[in-house]
Amino acid sequence: MVIDETVEPEAPTGQRHLGGARVLARNAVGSFALNLVNVATTLGTMVLLARIMGASEFGTYSFVVATATLLGIPSILGVDRLLTRDIAVHTSRAAFGLARGLFRRAQQLVLAISLAIGLTAAAAAWIAAGGEVSASLVAFWLAAAALPFLAVGRIVQGGLMGLHHILLGQSAEYVLRPTVLLALTVGYAIAGATLAAPTAVLFQGLSLGVACAVSVAWLRARTPKDVRDAAPVYETRRWVLTAVSLGLLSGAAVLNSQIGVALLGAISGAESAGLYAVAQRGALLIAFPLSAVTTAIGPTAARLWASGERDRLQRLVTLSARAVLLTAMPLVVGYVVLGRALLTALFGPDFADADVALAILALGQLVNVATGTVATLLIMTGYQRKAALGISVGALVNVAGAVTLIPALGTAGAALAAAGGIALSNIMLVIAAHRHLGIHSTALGRIGLR
Image (cartoon, rainbow, N blue to C red; front, top):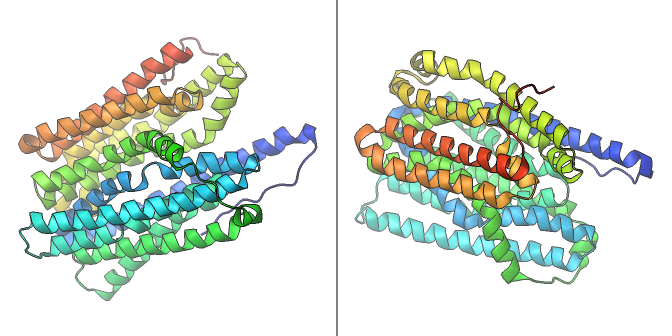
C-alpha cells in the first residue's frame, strides 16, 4: 500500500486557502489511515510472534529490538526532523544548493554514526558475554547490523516529508516495514518451524532493509531536478546543532517507549521483558486516537494562534480532548477489569501475568489522553522548549523509577515508573500551556465552554 499526494497547480488567490485546507484534510485522513494500518499489522505480528515463540524467546526478541531502537536515538541525531523542516524552507526559497548539501551531509553523517554505534555495541555485547557466543548475542548482533537501515530510512522519510510528500514519506515506515515483517512471520508460521529470537530479529532487520531501500528509491525519483543539479552548499555545524535540539523531543518519546523493556531484560530477564512488551503495546492503543487527532489539528492550531483567534483555539483543543477521552475510556475500563482474560485470549496463558502492568499503563495513558494535544499545542505555538522540558523530565523520571522499582516489583515496577513519568510530563505541559498560552488543554477545558 503506497499513498502519495501530488502538488496541485497554482490556484487563483481566492481559491488557495480552500485548496490548502483540502490538502491538509487529505494528509490528516491519509495519516490516520497509515497509522491504522501500522497499528493493525504491528499488533497482529506481535500476537503471532508471542504465540509462536513463547514468553522467554519473545522476551529476548523484544529486549534486543528495544535496545537497538534506543541506539537509534543517537544514530539519527534528530536529522530526520531537521530535513523535514529545512528542506521545505530551502526549496521554497530556491536555495537548491543548501537543499542538496543538506541531503548529502545528512546521509553521510547518519550512516557513519549508525555504523560506528552498531559496531561498538556489537563489540561491547560480546565483551559483556565473556566472549561466549549465545543465541541472544547473535540476535543482538543482527539488530546492530540493521541499525544503519533504521537510521537511513528515518532520514529519507524526513526528506520526503520536507519535499511535501507527506504520506509517501510515512508509507515505508508505517505500512511497508510492518507488512514485510508480518508476511515473513506468517510464512514461517505456515511452515511450522520453530521461531527463535535470532530468526525473528533477522526478519525485523530484513523488513527495515526493504523499507529503507524503497524509501531511497522514492526520494531519488521525487527530488526536484533543480536540487539534483545544484552545487552542494554546506552548513554542517549549524545543521548538527539544530538537529540535536530538534531530536530531543523524538528521542525522549522513543526513550519512554523502549526503556522499560530494555531495563527489564537487563535486570529481570527475557521473560519479564516479553510480558512488559505485550502490556505496553496494548496500552499504547489507548493513545492511538490522540495521535490521530494530533496529526489533524496541529496545523490548524498554529494558524489560529498566529491569527490571534484564542477562543476558537480553546474550543478546538477542548473538544478534541473530550472526543479522545471518550474514545479511550472503554478500552481503559476493559484493560483494568478484563486485562488478564484479554491477554490470555490474544497472546496465550504465558502472558496472563502481564495484567497488572497493563492496568497500570492503561491508567497512565488515561492521564495522557485526558490532557489532550498539549505537547503539539506548545510546539505549534512556538513553545517547543517548554514541550521538550516536560517530556524530558518525564523520561528521566521513567528511567530513574524503572531502575529503582524493577528489582523489587518486576513488570509492575516498570509500569509504575512509566505511568509516573507520563503523568508528571503531562501535568508540566498542561501548566506550561495555561501559563504561556492561556489555554486549558485538558478535557475539562473551561467550565461553560460554548
